[in-house]
Image 1 (spheres, rainbow, N blue to C red):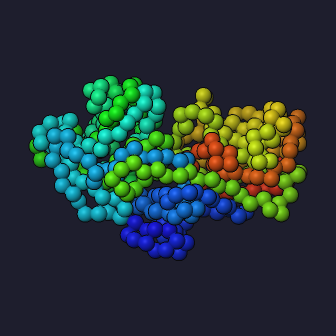
Image 2 (image 1 turned 90 degrees about the vertical axis):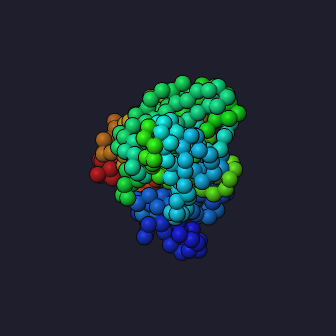
Image 3 (image 1 turned 90 degrees about the horizontal axis):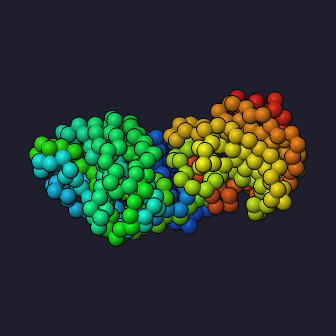
Length: 387
């Protein structure tokens, strides 16, 4: 693992002084690129190819994503404001954005391309300065439109959205007082010159805020760091080893963690136990059409049963228990036990993917616990495991 203050050497330690993740069966993670993860303090760590992103916040798993511009704010321009480069903070290269007397003035990223109706995912981190306010903006320079989030640091709100709607705003307070904002922008036009911007939202000349980081990505992502241009990060493919594990009688699986964002399409998996493809699958997934976690089982691609567990909440801890066997498909979400399906087929799985379907349909998760119980499930046992 690469620390925020230099290279420690891969595998020599964990971010944030140890890690907060446990599993009772060996976990393998493959990933074709370097990737990043935060600890509970918001310190950022880089991890090598195929290295598990373990910090004291847990195990981070994300889908593939591409940063659409050079690392910002260090690569960028001033939109009316002035700026000064601040000392490096770990892996971040912060910049102070100073108002020249108009509230719209800000630090601007390098331009990037957008496609009408294709979502873009924003992550911005800032520190309050002499201005108590902040302005986060996405702008389409070709069509002269803009959508903004603005207000005080503790409670900014979505404002005008002439460049397209902004949704899923999360405002996270870090232990050092910084704020990290994530939200989704769905452009209402195709553009060859879009940009993101952060500023002090102040009409008082000289008022400033410090911008720690800002990025736009093609999928929801942790920070993607380094470089003056577009940069891709591969997704994680995580799985539990089933070598020597007898799953013929069925199984229960408990997963604890945090959902990092709301998927905007597809049926993203918390896990999937299968025979190497979708035909015989046991899974719990996030249904983007209704915002619920749903459990299901299939044999020869024929639905065997399942049901709804609960509405997951972004950035809030969750605990899922899933149970699959012949004549049993059920589970629990945050100790709320669902009524099971008691007439169902079951095919013994030989693969158990975590956070995806063998690398497909991934969820963005920070996990703290995975516990597998290869046994015939009952509602009493589901209740016990969920407690």
